[in-house]
Length: 178
Length: 178
Image (cartoon, rainbow over all chains, first blue to last red; front, side, top):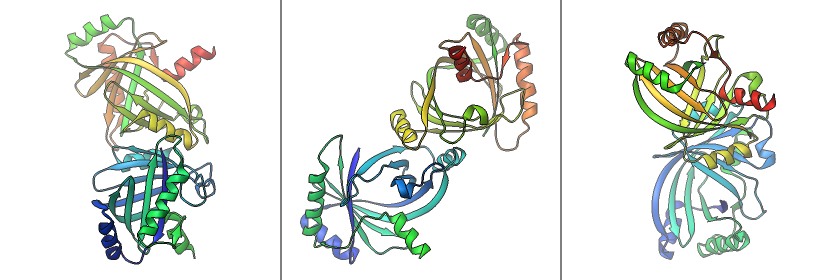
């Protein structure tokens, strides 16, 4: 699967919730998500622009691999996400085969759906409010068109700046190391 | 979890099935198992005596890590096994993070239970008949006692030789490379 994803800083969740409801976006689940990111023993994922994480939500646990970004404007990249039995076992296996826990990102995420967009209002521990808009594409679909549609939706919601291509993990990294 | 496991060549499945029934072992599930073993980019698992595999059975898919053997007689080792959503996704993730598919082992396994033993009659593609007897231990339990009990059970079933410490994967490897 290819995910095309753009995020931007927003002023406030309350204001954005009103705008989303006004355009007819449908509020769906709210989730607490804890993401444990792993460092590879053979490459620096920050350099290769990849990510490997275990995500634990209210109801599920996943392993997710994200490939390098395919273009500059959006975060268009390969994503493989798989449900697993247990975060503890997955950590144990990954550590045994040479990976180590790097940073943990915790957030409350409110999902909205609108047309074929998935919209997330992200209250990330340690960061200001962000909104993420994503389209999932199968196979060889044209991602530049998907990307344009995402930017048009941001505009419709009054967001024309504050776009951020850096991941939450790296944003937190920058805060803690600066 | 620590598994203590011993396997031995047997003459025939039919004969052993009769012996198992005679001592009161209970026939349980029969499964087709396909195990894809992976090679690590940082260590030679044959040297470090570890294994990482994806097992697909009739009903489930697992990732399994096996640590180095802790003693010489039995295969006593750490094992972490986790149910996963999909073998395809797991392969994709493992390959993306640097692992590559090594050998595949396919077998029909007939399970028996007896006291706290798990007994397997293993019809491995490319190998002669084997029987495996296993005890799973939690934490710091004494594995030498478990090991002795396994060898006594083999003796009770008429097996006093033909013990094999090499994994099915390595046995197949030896055939193909000799």
